[in-house]
Amino acid sequence: MSEIKRKTTLVICLCLSVIAGCAVMQGKMTKSYESEYHDTVRASSDTLKNLKIPVTEKQSDELKTIMNARRFDGTPVTVEVVRIDRNLTEVSVRTGEGVKLDNRVSKQIHEFIGENLVRQVKPGITEEDLADEPVKEMSSAEYGTGLDDQMESQDALKHAETYMDSIFVIYFDLDSNALSAKAKGKLDRVADLLLKNPNVEVTLNGYTDSYGDPSYNQVVSERRAGMVKAYLVGKGVDPAKIEAVGYGPQKFLATNKTRDGRRLNRRVEIEVSNMTR
Image 1 (cartoon, rainbow, N blue to C red):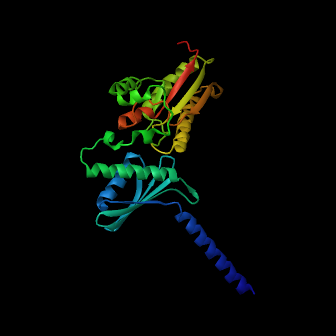
Image 2: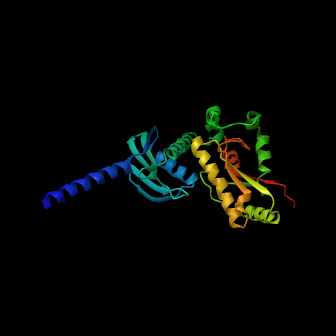
Image 3: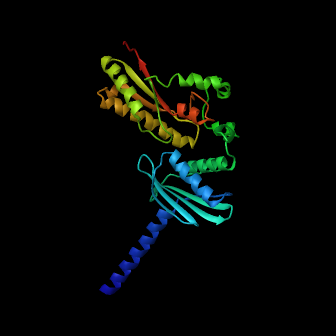
């Protein structure tokens, strides 16, 4: 009887292992590209690099390449490139682990891989050329009055760049809420001003560019505002005086058609009321 129980237990364990294995393998977002294998591998590698998702392990031969990487928050990302034919490849992107998967980020990575492949096919292409459907690209974002005119004007970008050195505007890298050394320097000065004016109230408004899923961008904007609040609180500012709000892809300072424009839109603006310097 004990032998039967032992075998039954073994079978159950094996079944659970198979189920667990299936859960781990689920969630891959796979897409085919009409591109040469090595070009697709290079485009995938460049995408991870540009998104600041460092590759921790890479396995590659002439038929398949697997790149394991990790995002800034530790979330694992796996990109698998498979040669199907001479000018046909298949790319699988998986973000997350177990049952905690993030298909929104996987979709965004695919979008950037496609853009990188376009650049390789058309040398010298600019990001302006990639925005062949700007209205669709922006459809998820709420515009301010006159933003269409702003998007078409190079003067808008020049105007936005005047905010770069303001201590009340903190900028972020793509898909990141990490504070750069320059951002921390700005926030040190802001904290000093706030500590000298303990009665003021502060609102932190977080924003993103228009790329990616709107719901994901909403979360990113909230985390950016929260990161700025955490830093100020760490410097001694009263947390009860600080409100952190995320708005996602809204109130763009510059065009989202260019890399520089998107960089200016990934920000947290610091609003301070009743301050005396």
